[in-house]
Image 1: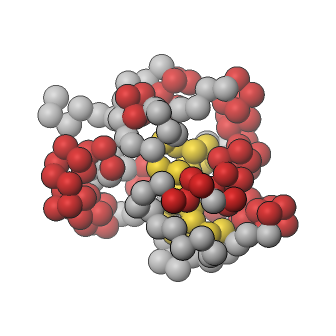
Image 2: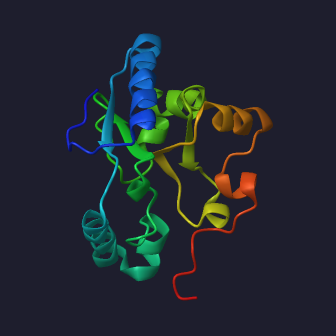
Length: 166
């Protein structure tokens, strides 16, 4: 599967993603791209600092996890784009593409959830990211889909992202 930056995932998550990418190609004719997966601490420092420089600390905290708190550091999260839309991981462009809509509707079949849905910032602590998917396994993803629970916070009764100041 296309992975231009070479980011990896845990084996089971990567296998499921490979299957999902194949299904997207077969079902909607679109090639998905593994844009950004596992990030070590140093890479997350750079990513977070980029948003701090762009939006200040408060803005960065809505967009990027601080180093040590990122799902990307687990090897279970991947930012996914496609090869045709020209969208990036900034803004809402990907949400309005066929690939983005297919992923949002079908990722659960492969064990993934859209991690930061629209209108759930108060629940997750992060702004909507239509490209950020988290592997949770087929059983949990299917149960969440079937029950209509969109976030891990709601499913497990967790608070939003950490209060870094506290």
